[in-house]
Image 1 (spheres, helix red, strand yellow):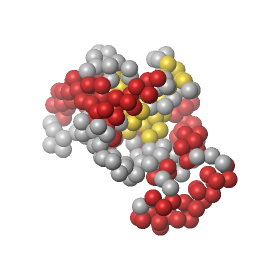
Image 2: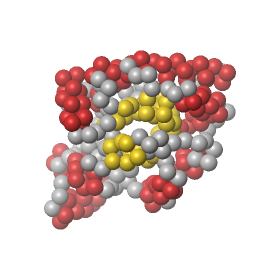
Image 3: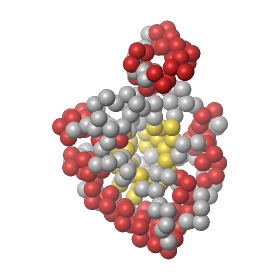
Image 4: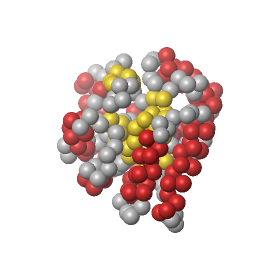
Length: 248
């Protein structure tokens, strides 16, 4: 395994365990639905044995936080995401809302503090409530409930808008062997140069990149020319889709 040292001198594994399926039926390739607690326990034991020490979750992932709290046994540090701001919230009550949401997550996770809290909907930082939201989370960090703060994004323009405005430790972004927008734009290089934690999600494109040709949903046949290239690449490299995705 490869390890890195973050800005707080914490040694972390470069593989983070995603947990959307621990609380919901997530993923294009998911035919089994939500993972039961017995399977979760097996996954946790295997991951811990292999040195993986971080789990990524969210308050919006169904029962994921609660299941993690029941089965974690302090094997893992936790990254979670705060829910989107209620549309009708009074900006003066944002701090109270943030504290309540964070406390609910900590109780569900059975943790006194977490490795990172991410803003799940970065658009919450765009409007007039953005400063209140950010300051509320920053204060929670200063109190020691959160070690790192950041946001989960989908497009490079979100970084264009937010990066210089709010000081963060972590950026979670979609990146895989087919989706290289953040690499091509130069953002990955800039984030690395600034010593930010980059958490790549969708490395398997919800499992789509790991599926056999005959198992891919018909909807994706419109990109058959791309899939042909992908399948040929795997064949020529004499590798597996899993190794290719993680290798990238």
